[in-house]
Length: 331
Image (cartoon, rainbow, N blue to C red; front, side, top):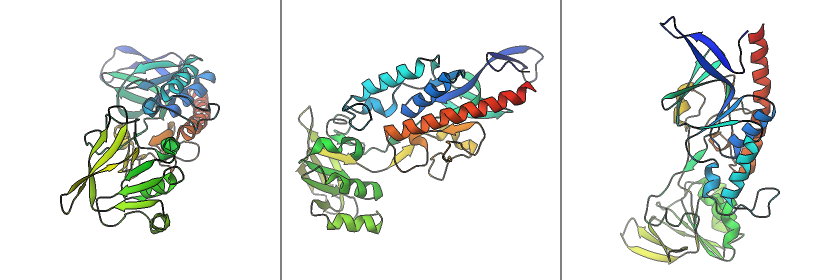
């Protein structure tokens, strides 16, 4: 039987020398809320767990100033919540290592994970790499991120009660979130580069019928203007006339696309055409032993709470999978 807890002696390809390979029960790629929750569940189940992360633990939580919609905390800063989650994830012996994963390969019951010059081996993998918002790449966007510039209406909409809100984009997300924001803002202006929306007709109809919503057509953002501490306005260019105007704004929500961090896994054929990883409700991909959680999944709502739920489900399923593999190898 293989020693699946610590190390496996195998022959290197083309050589007679023996090398020792540390084998983990599970390697979790990414340390956002979903990844850290999965690590909490697997390590608590006494599985040898490794978290691989290319940056600081927390994911998008680190870019969130205040969290008001996470159960148990009336309000908490994103970094503080990330720190709490990290401590919880590590309390049962999970390991943590820096690593920028470039690929996963299959070797029998093992998954071979390449991260820089290092190679890791595991029976199961949980992909928790998340997603990122496509940015406008205009002056002021980075400077005022979290200080008036946001990419999540559900997260930050309540901070702009009775304020002037701008929404950038014309697809489903922009129009739907713009309508959502009217319950908070004094007014909502949707800025779109074309003369008609790309959103579903039912979403358009709702927006057009809402008295709080108006539109800037054929327009693109040139710059976000602020006073050094918060955003105060949006400079907009008419793509037809070239005219540039500045509009007062207290908050801006950008919805020009969300992209999954899934490039290292595309050769596994577990993503859809847009790169989102496809799983079932048990967080299983089409490859046994490879799971995905959180914002990298093909799903409709991407929130801290949904990522945590994904992580708990994946942790439970990983335990079942690893136990089955161990039973097979012990025979």
